[in-house]
Structure formats: C-alpha cells, structure tokens
Length: 149
Image (cartoon, helix red, strand yellow):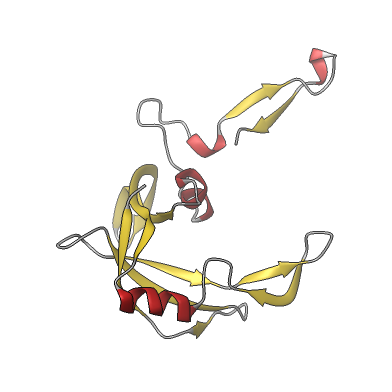
C-alpha cells in the first residue's frame, strides 16, 4: 500500500440523504495526477442493522483531515485503476475506472460499491462476484452458491 498526499479539501457539504461530506484531492506524489474522494458520515445502525438518524464520521472528521493536510502528513492508500464492465461517460464507452483505496479497504469492494466491479484481466469474469460451491450440510444436494470474500 502506498502513501497519498492531501492536496486540497473542500468545505463540508450536505448530501440529499442528510449526511455531511467533504471532498479530498489526493495525489501519490509530486507531479502525479490528482484524484478525488468524498468522505461521508455514516449512519449509525440499530441492533437489527437498520440505519438510524444518528450519524458518525468513521474515516475521520473534516478537522482531522485538514490538520493532516496542513502538517503535510501522508495517508495510507493507493490510487487504483482496473478493468471494469464497459460503461458510458458522455458519448464515450470506457472499460476502466480509478478509485482511491485506503489501507483498510479492498479494491474489489471499493469498485463494486461504486457500481464498477473489477473484471479479471484474463477471463473477463467479475472478480467481486466470483461464486464458489460451499457445502452447508452433509448432503451435497443442499450446497449453495455464496459470494467469496
């Protein structure tokens, strides 16, 4: 995992779902292209796993990121580009996407959560949706397909 430099930070804004967020511009180093990532508040979940109206900053607060930027601190993470299912940007079809992946994240999960699951370069199969047969009972006929994590 590499290190990223915060080049700029936007003011805090509010999304349509009432969560607050801000935008970071990050680069891997001097002369490297900048990429943006939005840092959102997360809804707190109740005991059943449902969102409540309470919110919390899990990745870090605006003040923490601003302080890190002002001090020139690096953030653990990488700028990852991968082959994905083709999609349209304006009039052009593209088959790659680029996202910021922080040290505690998996690239497959970041891409999939942005509706761009990564494709295996050789097979073209969706990496984040590969399935495997798992025996959940002693009877093989009751095996189910589950997502591999």
